[in-house]
Length: 474
Ligand code: SAM
Ligand code: SF4
Image (tube, rainbow, N blue to C red):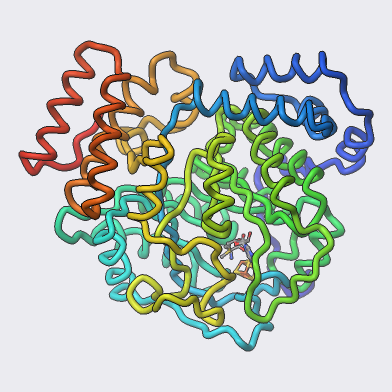
């Protein structure tokens, strides 16, 4: 890019997306039942799949094989990952942007967008509103702009952690922002961030170039692809991948996500903490006439195949999807969702019932309240969790530990989920939700093995309920 300063990449940076290799695998023939079952057995043993095995699952597209894959995803969710769903909310800090990604309402050419950057006081107000609803985990979202440099991101993170109202506090702040340089990652890490997310949007080079003009920072494919490698080198080992589904063939994108996850695992010994799979949504000033839009059925296949392919990675399903799709997809291995989300700048205090497209990046599909989503989850047998314990006691790679250490879920995850749920019920829930929640806690306690841990959970639940204690965790 002429006129742009040279950008420093990670050591040994390489474009690891080999299109000919991926396309070759996707052009293979449909695997037989025995082969699919072999791969399924590997998934059930919590082994990561290779890209070749992932391709086989993608090619296994008969109704019968497909159902086996869905059933395996459900089984993994139920028996291996458990029924917890971690809840968070997005907080948009600023929508100024130097880039021009054609699918996004924040693109610089969009004259309809109302540009705004929250100042630290406004961030505080938004966080108080979120805490008053019961949130404990946020993701801060930024456009790409010199005003949103690493210092500004770090300052915003500190403001969030410092903001407290009543029993409310934010215990984990994740980030979705432009790729940084090594120094930038070190700066945001020092502010205590959780996961740093960068979505590659589309891994297909030609399509990437079409959506991200060459005269923009984001137009630099390798700088973005390498973004999370730099994060690792700078000491941020908690990172999130994602693709914006609808820009290119979903099969190619799933193969690329798995390739990226394996690359990080090989090079840094740690895979991504999460994978997100947003689907393209209507947005102000954006023409959505894309030929690769993903159907609901294919969307479910994407989630199930990812669940089988990357056992140690959390899967995030966002409120871009509508309530019904979210409910249907939950059983395929989703581990985190946002709820009660508003993405207009200042939306948690200023927005009415209707979304204002000029103030948001895209239209959300699910703007139900946190309380309503919690109630539905619990009615469906899921345990909503606000747990942040691993990250706070320095057990990084929490998702990895959950599944690699025998008994970890029963000793840590479920107890912590129940304690954070009880806090929510005591401080923020509506009477109907509290009733459903208390019933669920009783049912979950029955399932916990008898012993010291269970006794401690019962005691701590009581300390929260009757003793006014908060923030108890294992
Ligand atoms: N500006 C930073 C960047 O591009 O990396 C931060 C990310 S942006 C604020 C958050 C994500 O929203 C993007 O990475 C993209 O995947 C997604 N997004 C953008 N436009 C969208 C749309 N119309 N529908 C759904 N998701 C969209
Ligand atoms: Fe800017 Fe990110 Fe939107 Fe692209 S996706 S226009 S970089 S906010």
